[in-house]
Image 1: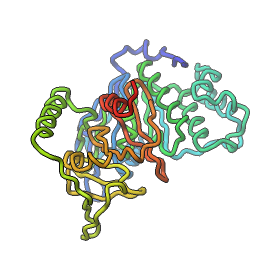
Image 2: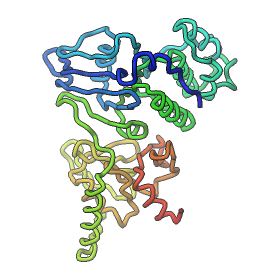
Image 3: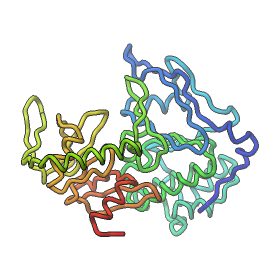
Image 4: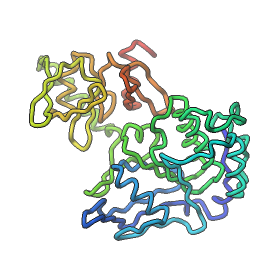
Length: 352
């Protein structure tokens, strides 16, 4: 794997590479877009902010210096530059892949190796192809190569894995890991919690109510207590089989058969059933649904997710501690699988 140049890091000192939001708040048309919050992202950290589109766009404009915060400030070392990876960014489609990297190399007066960057994003075999001839995912890898050529101290990435194929997602995960090892500071702006779980050290939700951390794993002691409690309940209570799961849609109660459900997600205490690409709110908690659906082949794959194992097509290993389940539905939904649950799943499948 390509090791990124660390000259700038050594020159300014290891502990200066941070991005700080200090009492940051933004209002639009007398409405609060996000409440005052404080956040420090240190070097080697990969932090995700889960937001809606409006918050994400405003944060990008603020970081680009095009608009200002209503209150507070953003700090980072003056001698360091920000590198942006946008969801939508025009490419020089008439150029060949290598030509576009050479162009960015000259603009940024980079000392990065073009050949090594091409190998990192696995486009060395297509370096002489015109960008317009590439797939969408390959074009996004060209965009990733551009920011690696720039070699900023702080990376700002907008929905980096949206609509990417599996190969490109793996490449992206590996690049993030290498950037973290090279003491880079990385902020990811996304609307997808399941994507954030695959590659972030810390995950937060930012909205009009402020900044809230999203826990990615159950505490060991808490998990142990729940396990003991469940074992005790299993000894004294016979599970009840519910044939229908109720949801509310436009003031109507809609009942779904368990086999119809692809997976279930909990977001800030609200539970949603995902069925054929649509989501439906449910009044039951995730713990309630785990008990009710256990006998229908559902599996608690993560603190915030339950999946219908009959719908699982693939188990993807992103890193040593990061896994996903790909479902056999029309949109190939991806559901996070926690490290602790990976062992349980292997046991259920009879794998070591």
